[in-house]
Length: 124
Image 1 (spheres, rainbow, N blue to C red):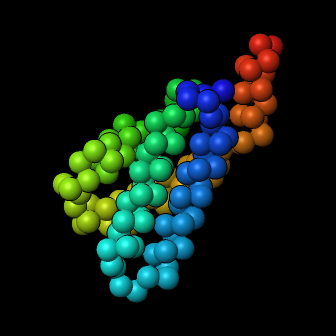
Image 2 (cartoon, rainbow, N blue to C red):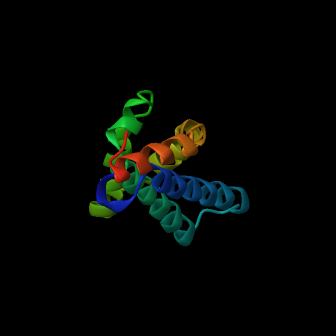
């Protein structure tokens, strides 16, 4: 079990759901309005919070992902929301989101779940 009671499988699932929402919203939104921006920033914060709770092992297995930057974005969106540049958000959506999504989609949930269950059980 990972930090704060949720395991990596659950956190990756949260991330995948957030990715899916953002991709779907981007495809269906021709105009960027306040509600769209708020929803996208909320889902980016969900991704950051999920990343923050991933196990160190999970993150070590994917050194190509800028984990600290993702958590940092979450902190800005949550605690410094007034100072968030939409241009930066668009850049993240255009350049980084798909790469992160592809990296976690390759995650072997079954293997990780079995490992988490063994840790909970105390067996190895």
